[in-house]
Structures are given as structure tokens and as C-alpha cells.
Picture (cartoon, rainbow, N blue to C red):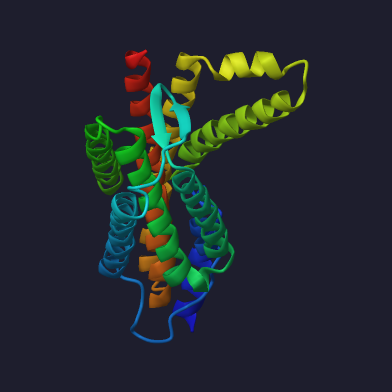
Length: 285
């Protein structure tokens, strides 16, 4: 009984010690469940389930390619878009499907955050939607520049490995100072988003906001800041995973830990891809 009480106190302290990277990890940090059997969270289990979600991300990529080569192949490409310097011609149906997939991704992400028990299903669907979106960007928007997608993947893997090494060696820890930096950066991003949104609603300031956000270097800087924040979020993800393992929480929480980590990794990839698209698109101009 004493061990259980000490374990619970340790988890309570942990909940106030880390800044979470996403709603799923935040929810996991508030869990006070204690395993009543030997089936507890293990690093191998989290790794396996992380690979599971990433596999379905690949499935989403394949799904996009299949639909593009079969369902969309004979359709008239009457929609013309200019996405950050890349001119894209697609069929209306392609645009509708991408929009629907994006909405489905947002919905499943929210359900996963507020209904952790649904993560095996909602997390899988979310992973598929992200894979579909990534495939659309790489193979449709970047037609002829598909190598950018592979470069983004290599950079993302490098970021994850570097942050993992920095955490496991103790070079970076989720300390109070680290949390302060995280809050400052994240708060800055939120403030920029709020000011931009409000400015775009006011007719007087709308042109000014559009000119600022349309500036290549400002847009590039904001994206770079997002990548830095997402990369630092990996540290809090690793810390959370370590805590749930050491506190011997029930094995079912491996799904939450894995999905939280995959969420951050996919966020990093999309942001890295975004900054590469901006760089190449600007050079094309």
C-alpha cells in the first residue's frame, strides 16, 4: 500500500512538471490509474504501437496514389491552384476529397484527445488522413519535385534521432527553465495567430496583415519557429513516456503514449515539408 501511495505521489508531481506537446500527452499526464497486474506500459509496447500508426500513415500515402491513378485519372483538371510557387492543376473531385480528409483528420484528432479509449481506432484513422495529405502534397502539388518529400523525411528522422539522443544522454531535460522556453515560444506562436486572425477580420488592417503574412521571409521565419517548437515538444513526449513506464501504468496507455509521439513526429514532417516547399517555390519564382 505504501508503494502504491508513493507511486501516486510521484505521478502527481510529474503532472505539474512538464509542458505537454499535444492534447493526447496532456490527457495522459493527468491519468492517475495504477496497474493491478503485471501488464504495464513498456518501451517496447510504445515502440510497437508507434510503428503501427506510422504504418497506417504509409497506408494513407498508398491510398492517395491508388485513387489518383484510378479514380481521378480520367477527370478533367479544371481547378488551378498556386500553392507557394507551385502551380497545381487538379480535378474538383480531388479537391473535395482532400478537404474531406483534412476535416476527418481534425475530427479524429479531437475525438482522440477527449476520448483516449478511442485512440486505437481514431488514431489509426488520423494516421491514414495524414498520410493521404502528405501524399497529395508530395505527388500532386510537388509534381516533378517529389524528391522534396524524401528530403523532408530524412530531415525529420534526423531531428527525431538528435532529440532522442539529447534526451537520453541528459543534454536536454524537461526542467523548469526548459518549460519556460517552451511556454515563451508557444505563447509567441499563439499570439501571432490571434493577432493575424483578428487583423484579417478588420477591413482597415486586412491589407496590412495580408502584406506581412505574404512576405516570404516572415512566412519562412514563422515556419522555422514552428519546427523548433515541435522539435522541443519531442523532449516532453519522451519525458512523458518515461514517466508512464516508470510509474508502471496499465498497458492500455501505450496507445496514448504512441499516438502522442506520432502526432508530434507527423507535425514536424509537415512543417519541414512546408519550409522546403517555400524555399523551392520561391527559387522557382
